[in-house]
Picture 1 (cartoon, one colour):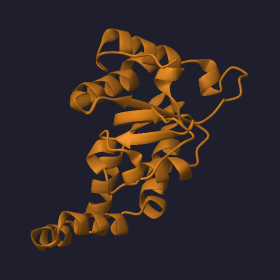
Picture 2: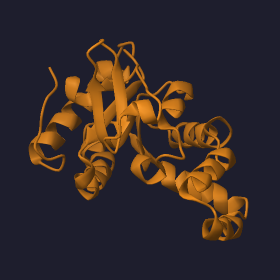
Picture 3: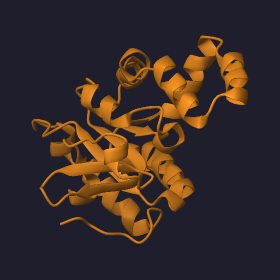
Length: 201
């Protein structure tokens, strides 16, 4: 049964998340075999600033206090770093003046491919950190031009990955699940079906 909290920033929500994500079986430590590698941590879009502070505190204080090394990988930072490295800001700014929103999204999707850009950067950040668990953030800021469900389907790491996102992880009537970023039904942006909701742990 999914645990419900009124606010992602509440002490109760924080304690629950830390307790579940520091579990040795989940982390694959102390003789346990890691059960799976992909989790989602949804929160109401209106609580974005609280979720940001929560993840920062969990990564810097709560999990390290339990002997768990955590890293946060922000997709928005990954995108900005790539655009900077390729000197693409000027081109995008020029295109923004004449292109429609849909055209800009298509341009960004073509430029910042999940397989060629996002996935390698995220995997490198996780590997280089020496972490026990990784949190992927910046999902709302990069939606819809970064296809998050594609990233989760392709990412290769031997560490648990927690996708923190504004929206819902829904159980559908047919037994499937859907990742609804910003509460937009995933039929409009693709679905992801193999992650476990942290609030179901």
